[in-house]
Length: 146
Image: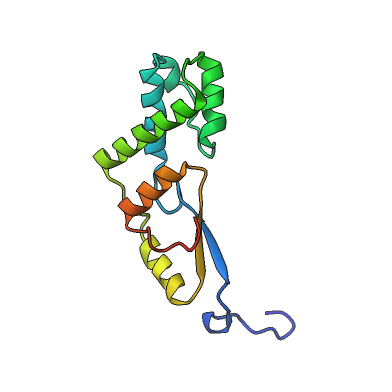
């Protein structure tokens, strides 16, 4: 303690007005499912071993990622078609394997909402995937904004 300052405790802190959460890798460990859906789509387009040598596209938005894959592997499908195929592969994989939220997430969200903190979700994942994941996780009612 310097200069007579008092230690902070939870009773003296005001909650924030809002908190933003990322989805993939924060609220749920979904990166393996995302990567498998990429591999699935590339294999459907005849890209075999080369697909497994790629770095997983963590943090990429679908459009720029698939534009790069289309260029790199001379894929005939449009970026929109590739994005939709990956979303479909992701949802099928999620339904087959199941997903669970990161431990403590549901309790944390309930705690924040009970205290009037606005909770929002941010994600680079396509909205369709986000909504299906939130429903599967049982977290779809917690966010004021997605």
